Amino acid sequence: MKQDMIVILDLGSEENPRLAREIRALGVYSEIHPHDITAEELAALPNVKGVILNGGPNRVVDGVEIDVSKEIYNAPVPVLLADHGGDAPWPADPEERKAALSNFVFGVCGAQANWNMENFIADQVELIRRQVGDKKVLLALSGGVDSSVVAALLIKAIGKQLTCVHVNHGLLRKGEPEQVVKVFRDEMDANLIYVDAVDRFLDKLAGVADPEEKRKIIGGEFIRVFEEEARKLDGIDFLAQGTIYPDIIESGTKTVKAVKSHHNVGGLPEDLKFELVEPLKMLFKDEVRACGAALGLPDSMVYRQPFPGPGLGVRCLGAITRDRLEAVRESDAILREEFAQAGLQGKVWQYFTVVPDFKSVGVRDNVRTFDWPVILRAVNTVDAMTATVEDVPFALLQKITQRITSEVKGVNRVLYDLTPKPSGTIEWE
Image (cartoon, rainbow, N blue to C red; front, side, top):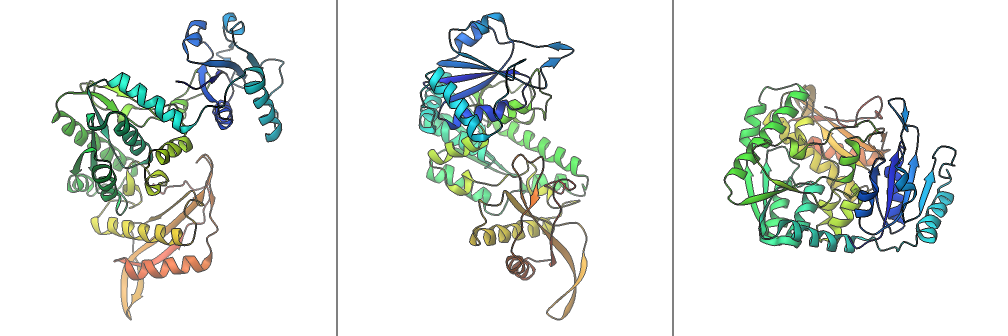
């Protein structure tokens, strides 16, 4: 790592990720480490220019107030106490906060603003080559942002030493499997194994209506397919995955309860003994996107909307049928196309369609129909913990309705979900 670094030591603050992001926004690299880091471990970190002891409401653990070691207070770099006992918290005003942070980072620590994506990519290429040597790496390439950026970074670093496995489980959006093949095999000349497992997944899901059971089947079957493909390959020593910084932070620290557990590739069998390669593990999501753009990935891949792991399987409500799954896929494609033409792509956080497992009476060509409704969902959020509903122009909703009811087989109604989170969730299942 060539960049200067400011280390944040977690003393119970819930704002550590925000603080790290603000420092990175100044052009200086920052990492969060636990309060009980030793002076030797701190000294081993590269190019540390300053340390912030960031206190907060979770500083008392099991009845004891946690603190860093005395050696940390005497570190050979500047140490800032923030909201630490009697010390003042960071200013609430954004501009005052930025000024205080900038003064410490540049004025006190003398750090250089040399954190940028080009330097990050250069460093990671060097680190990957050093870790992997002349050996081979395997990557499960879903087509999502994280795995796509990892693939592009590894191709740049080790080229044909990487093998990507793309499993099409039949639950991806329209055109996504084809895009993965086009970008990585055709344009980036990657070793790509494409596995058509559509029938295998849909047969397993037949008649299963419970959302959690569907998720378990999809996740478990994916692991089995990937494991089968991995066993066909010889000489694979490394497994790459798209772990990013929020995954690590959300797994919990000594002072922050876990938001969700972080599992290595969904719990692969222990006898698949690979060493992990995780080049994005210190990046936030927006930084991952910036990395993908710098590596030349298409915008449609880099700025792909959040998409659930089970894919369209949790948007085809209830027991999945092939015809209703196709109605979800086709209606979703129309929604995305119309939002893009209306300039809403990139402005609305997430939008998609849902097709429930019931029908209603309608009319088509003067003939009575008994078909499904399509539900439109469009929400905005910062952290996905709460969400507001996008105020979509009525004329646009009418146009989308006309297209879906005329172009999507088996559909006769279109509904717009007006429910924020809470009381609804973003997804329906």
